[in-house]
Image (cartoon, rainbow, N blue to C red; front, side):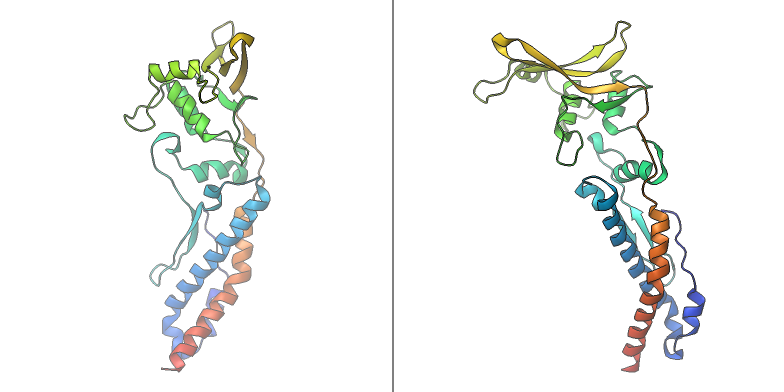
Length: 261
């Protein structure tokens, strides 16, 4: 996150009792860290107001980098997430950045894999179709995304979210009467020129035929967002309001402690 400035620090320090003036760096570090915690809490509350059903991961996506007596800087940072599969990217930053800065969203992890396999054209993006499974947060089901990536053999790792075998794909196509599951297949629909239009699912209804629904629609238009969360200006307001009070509180507590010595 950009630097958030603390104003009037010298004036606050000048008014301290001589007994604790040599402890100013420690007091300042504690006050900065406590203020950053308030900023983080405020940001979390704002997320619930700005976004529609933010996921728990997004709500927990910030952490406080503590200040020390030798480094009088505290900050609220976005958590980065490194791992395999579709989560191999800094999910929080990529998700929130378009809403904070405006503009087009970056390529999602599953889009990157589909592009690697030549399924999603390099100048197109994927949007959920009417047949997509939507989770409680209004996003396409991660389970269905993984299923599609596995179905189209997009995972390079062995033993981790492995690609579906031919037998598995065949079982899905047949379905299971015992489990009440209808057979289905995924396929890439193309236009007359061979350009992929999206990933569709054909579900079998036995003697009654089958139904086809779009799961992912490919579009040449990059999904964009308007700037809707001025997180940095809001954070600065919190710092301007809370830091002087917190600094004084920490200084008073420190003075009281040493007066008892």
